[in-house]
Length: 263
Image (cartoon, rainbow, N blue to C red; front, side, top):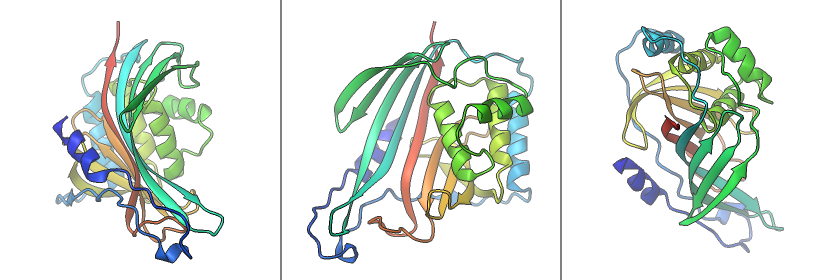
């Protein structure tokens, strides 16, 4: 957990004033540094490596439904940008902390902390509630039916995975099934071993999509022993458009710190 405080401190929040004559003269937002990957000598493809993690995550563990209720703690850092009437862009990097308590029907509470200020509000029933299938084919169909995105697109898969991890606790078989969804993404690559932004060891897998309007690399950080998705990152790879950032730029990352059953 010690790595969290360091990560938040190095990012900060950067706000720029308006009134500049054009966006090319605007200051750049201090986006978080890219993670450092250790390129391990692994001959297998990214999909095969994920399959190995899937088997290890579920091996010898009896099928178990997701807990009826639980507590989930995660953090995010996101780049927010707006334009003034002259076309100049203002970019602000906002760290956020979430503690979510959910029940079997998807209701619960969410405590959100932004810049030291916390608010707690009630959650309505979630479309992601209910019994989560354990078989990969059934899991994919279940997740697709509850998502308004394509699971075959890296952007859609990252969004669906993020929504799920922020509202549900997954058992070993469900974690393995989620990894299969990731493993089927077109153009998936293995980036290497990495220490995530919470100081945990993981393995990074990435795929690129222009679904957001800008070419973006979506990275899934996976703990090899348990199959747990530790984090999701979004990096602009070719152009920043009107965003005040230097390429390559990490514009969003989410770190999943804990997911525990309650009761």
